[in-house]
Image 1 (tube, helix red, strand yellow):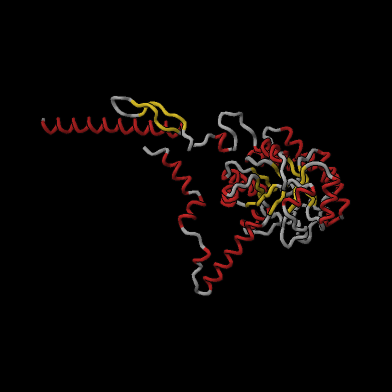
Image 2 (cartoon, helix red, strand yellow):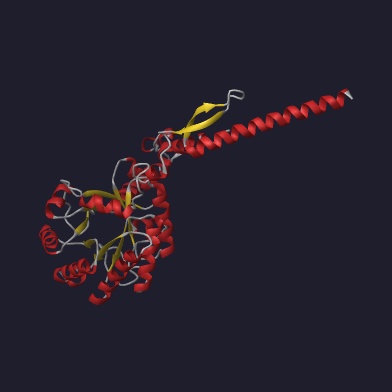
Length: 360
C-alpha cells in the first residue's frame, strides 16, 4: 500500500510538473509569436499572462522596409519611389548570385542589388550562355529574395525563355519571388553575356513584342513588378538600331531601359539624351563600356550603376590565391576570416536570436 501511494504521488507530481512545463512552453510560444516580452503575470504561478511587442523582433512589414502598422508596400512600388528620389549619383548596385552574396550586399547598406545571370550560371558550373533553365533562375531568385529584408533586387530574366507567352510566365514567376524588377532582353536564344562573342538579336518587331508581353504581365498582375528592357543591338547592328529599340521599348511601357555595351562616353550621353525614362549602366572592368563614377553616370542621365561581376570576380580571386597556397604546401590563414566573423556573416547570430524566442 505504501509503495502504491508513493508511486501515485510521484505520478501526480510528474503530471503537475508536466502541466507547468507545458504552460511555460505555451507562454514562451506566445511570447515568440508576439515577438514580445512579458508585461503581466499570474500571482499564484508567476507565469506571464500578456506580452508587449519587442523592438528586437521586426514585424513582417518592417522586414520588408515598411513602417510597422503602415499599409504594405510592394518591392516594385518601393523601387519606383527609390528611382524617383532626388540624388547626386546613380544608385550603386552590386550584383549577386546567391543568398550569401545578397546578405553581404544588404549588410553593407546598399539599397538595390541585381541577380546576375552570369553569376548564377557560374555557380551552377556553366558560362553565361543560357545553359541554366528558367526554373534554376527562379530558384536562385527565391533564395536571394528570402535572404533580403530591405534591399531591393532586380532579376535577370534573359530572353524570357521562349515566346511572348513564356515571357509573361517568367515575369509573373519573378514577381512572385519578391523581385522588384525583371530584365528582359532582345538576344536570340540561347543568349550569352553581352560582352562576349557570338551574340545575335531577334528582329525589331519581335524584340518589342517581348517587352509588350512583359509589360502586359506586369499590368495584369496579380504581383507588381517593374520591367527593364535591354538591347544588345549596339554590338550587332550599330548604335542607331540600339537607340531605336530603346525608344520603342520605352514607348511599349518599359520602366527602365538598358543599352548593353556602348563603346564610348559620347554614345552613353547620346543614349541618355534620346531615350526617355530611367536607364541602367553596366560597369565592367575590361569590358567594352567606359568605366565612369556613379556621379558621372548620374550627370549623364543614368539612374542605376550596376557592377555585374565585382563580387564573383573578387571572390574567385581570393579562392584562387588560397588554392595556390595550399598546392604549394603553405597555409592560407591570412586570406581567411576568423570563425566568429564567418559564422556571423552566414547568419548564425540571427538564427540564435530567433531561436531564443522559442525556448521553453
